[in-house]
Length: 401
Image (cartoon, rainbow, N blue to C red; front, top):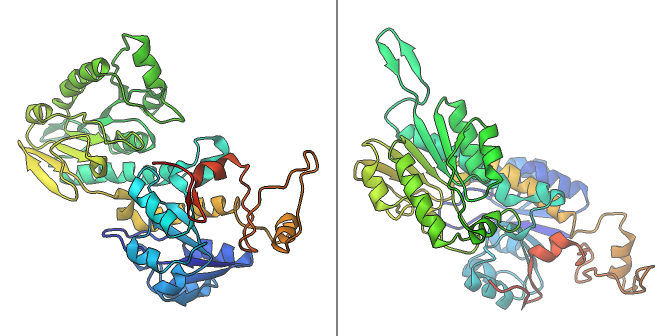
């Protein structure tokens, strides 16, 4: 089938949904890949590389008019106007944004939001949130180190000893754990906080100290368990105790990396104005949650500011600052997901469905759930990953944000 790879048009978005490596594999699988001129330029992938991999270079409208469109971010109104009803769209589509979901449905699309993939072992190789968060956690520490006026490791010289930098990481998910590992490799003393009890072992395995805020009620403990590997909003009583503990540790830190996010909700505010005032002059805060309001109320989206002597970095889309590697990982995630919705050359079921021949399940006699809109599609709606990611089908909204 025809697969379109348009250039991302959102401000500051440097990633691309397919690399020459992934295009080559799609072409080898029998698909026609249409790549917009310059789609990979910001990620250091040249048009010539895509052509050498078997892609056809086209205009934006031609890439968006393909049967299957792969994107990094959700299409805007201009892009949607160039897409035909019935087009299959796969990307990071912001499934918690009701307006975005309604736009996709109104355009008559069948859309898969990869952020909704369940946190199960079978879906690990298509987990776009983890692949991108890994890079973001690394970049956050590098940004913090660059803005910090001192070195990270302890250094003993003839002129005296320089103490190691102290780093506090708030949130020990994928990004937080990578931030811990990166800061430790640079020689810092690292502490980390997270609401989930299971995070302690991971934090300590990386050589960091876990900032413990004990649970006082069963309600607090249940909330901390989270759902599907994600943290949940915590009761006010626990948040108050955590704020006190975080303020104490941040006041002694040189760099604070904020990574705490809850899907579909504003970012929890963990570093108060009072905490910033108590931090040492020259300290740095890197707020990775700034696109959701930030973990610090003084963070400003897209800006680096100095407040009360503390440098606060509010740059969004940190994976986009590592566009080559971020695109490569994302493209591999997409390839793995496409195996669940694209027919293989030897897929007899999909061929029979494409020819209008009903295929029944031998055990139940029921028709197998396979998409017949395009011959190249074989969408198994019984698959839990497909079910989780499918947000709208032929213009019908399946999930509410």
